[in-house]
Image 1: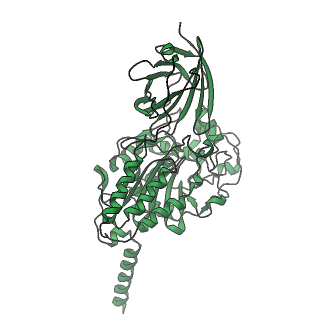
Image 2: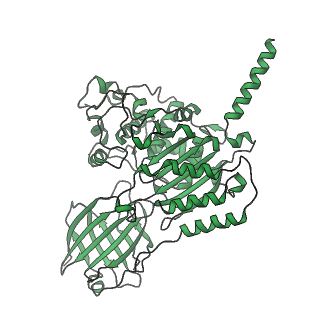
Image 3: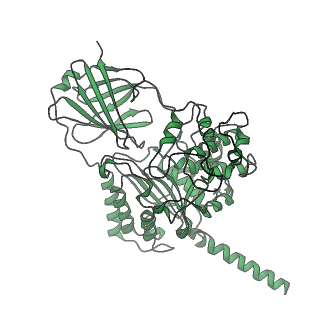
Length: 527
């Protein structure tokens, strides 16, 4: 009887493991490991519909996406980029950085460098004098930073507000700025979305590993996954940005999602404790937003428990979506554009359910289905159309172009746009502009910056900006006295409209970012 019970138990356990495994395992399909590059496949070969994925591409066209990528069973079945963004470029991923930092915290636990997430946060900063230090603040744990329940006062929220974040990045010591904040609630009692919490996690990683989160990731995460095109901005003390600051290519974002999908396993090695990702899937923190009633938060991830999906989420549609039961990883990158309704920035409310619904609907089978040549051609056409830019009206001409071409305009130090000088070469065969900044941003190469300008309604790419290649298009006003440039760094979500009003010896720049910020500065021509 004892032997029979043991055998029966073994069968039941094996059956349970099979049923809970991703579909690729259940089908006995070997996992491909995309360390040296992603394998590709038709959707139908992976049990998906090309016709329904074409609808996802259309959804991206109308929702300011820069790219969309879908993998199933470890193979890319859809990859589209929306002009002027293009494949092979890094993208600013904003708060997706938080989930990467969380992954590194899990790795530090696995390495024994961090003994517990129940450690008190203030113990890691014993060398600092912290303002507003009361018993509540002393009780904050690493776990509460991960779950956004530290109780620290912070004005950021999930609707696009960013007062505290902006103040933090303008401060000389981000860690001190965060630690000095008063308490708004008892630790562990309420959800407050805060990039400050995330930056403290990065600072703690630096303390327990003896190096920046970026350097730790190079050894433990980026290196093993074959990710070598990374930019990670840091605070003035060299601590990698915990709440934002990471730039990754979409295919590399998908690799990180694939690590999560496989429960921390990579090429047969457990590089992230499986329990860490299982803890993410069990997230239960109420985000206290009416539009997020089907979402929960935990360990710096957004989770849809009823649909078995979890996500790394960044501002303006930077997403890594993992759907274990369907064996899917999807990546979306996006930007704020002037074509957005009312010119207002996008918020996370744009509908995770809609995106996940497109992915769910595209799955038609656990195994390969018959090829559909018509649908395959339709999907290919949608991907091709996405890569073609929709031009603005042609930019016209002005006699002012020759008058200002070759001049350098200087601006006072410390101005709101940080611009030091600008030079136009508008009577050249390829019109262009060049500018210098008063202060070079963290992690950026030295100037000058700038590049070609398209006056035919199309962006001209190939320019050089602080954080990547640039694109610009221009148009003259009806009276010919002002030049309007739309300028962006591809993948940086920094689309700006700059109106240049020229006087005899003066210039006025009115800068309007698509995200809603603005600045106005005045300069003079060099003698």
